[in-house]
Image (cartoon, rainbow, N blue to C red; front, side, top):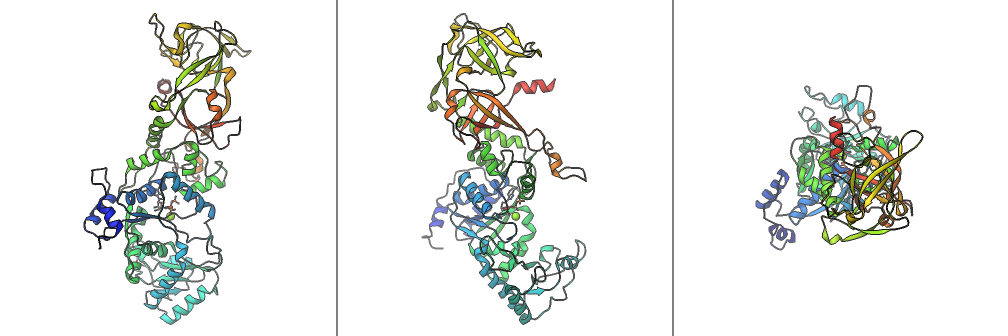
Length: 572
Ligand code: ATP
Ligand code: MG
């Protein structure tokens, strides 16, 4: 290979420092060493545009784009659109948006349907070589003839048609002369093969259906298995990564490549991502949307990239997660908590802090001057000094979380209660003096006194300490907001585990969405726009939802902070 190939040069200059490897990367490193593909690395991400991408696809995207990037190679985005009945432009658009959002840019943009003419010619080539035939068996009959795991299949009575007859029939299939399902074109391989995929697989089916790109041009469509490998080959893909269920299809793809004498892309299979409490199947996610179990593909509880984006997950967090889980040859299940860990870790670095009270309880500081407001300094992000600080108004009437007050404090409860002093973050030390109750005996207002010597929340000169710091929002300055709290969409670790008469929807968590409509936010959040992410102090990470309107912000809880109190309470 000439040294002027820019990709070869790029590969030679690829970083050599040790980084966490995986078996796919090792194969590529080896191929670069042996100059197998002239030092080229060409990958592709091949979604079928029949749904929105999910976090499992992110794993494949990070692998396909990540490895090509590392070795100065290229990655195509190719839509495997051989199934006109399930495919839509909406999905194509969403997939492109999601790939870009994850931080990747494809080199070539292709569609398997771009290759329909070429695939048709290749089918004719195989017929002429006596390697393919038109079969009149129905789908049911084909299934019956296929045999079982222990028994070989049976040859179709149409298997030995002459080349001329096959050519004529295939041409008539192409001309739209036959009804749907009445005939197929099959590869003539081996009905006794231990691999089902090699028992004369169907290459073409008759389907009078409009295609999202080719319209009504074709009354026949290639099967995925007759399109995928050749599409890779046409694009000179060197390393074609796919999930393990395609391992058994590799001999078939290699057979087509060999019989057609075309560029031999190398398929490498890796394990699918499975996550606890989550389903990663487009078919099942589609069912949730269709049955209105969620608000749409981008419902923040969905594991789709559009859902987790709306929820506030960052592309960096997802890429870090995908890097950490790596790839292997054995399928397992990853804890959802691990994904959440990477989300927290990333947001901790980048999300500005803010104070917000989700379930407000009124606090009146009796010895604080009426009509006075002080501007308190608050740090925007302790992890990022460059984020600076902001002013928060403090006044006589505040809101705190209902959870941060107990009239009768249980053991180890150090937050506000009658006679107890706590720190209001960036505010003052306050001591609870009395409460006001409603007719039902519920505390609706807490009265306190404050210590002016603790301004900013600092320890007083007498060295007195408090055991708890709580957050607050000044009542007169608060921005009212709706906050949506999400829990796992499924209550079972494996949502597919059901009784025989149920489907996975039986495992939907009835409490996966809680809408809080009376939340109080510090005034700096009034200008937040959809997509902005914050850490609400002591509560978690939150992001502004698309449903926000001017003066009516809606926030999603992206992920909670770890709550040690909840753990203590649970243990009891
Ligand atoms: P689904 O089962 O959700 O419908 P799929 O495999 O049919 O997924 P495709 O659009 O064909 O979806 O997938 C595009 C690429 O993403 C393929 O290479 C596929 O192997 C990969 N992929 C899909 N799901 C996962 C997953 N859970 N983990 C890793 N890779 C995946
Ligand atoms: Mg698929």
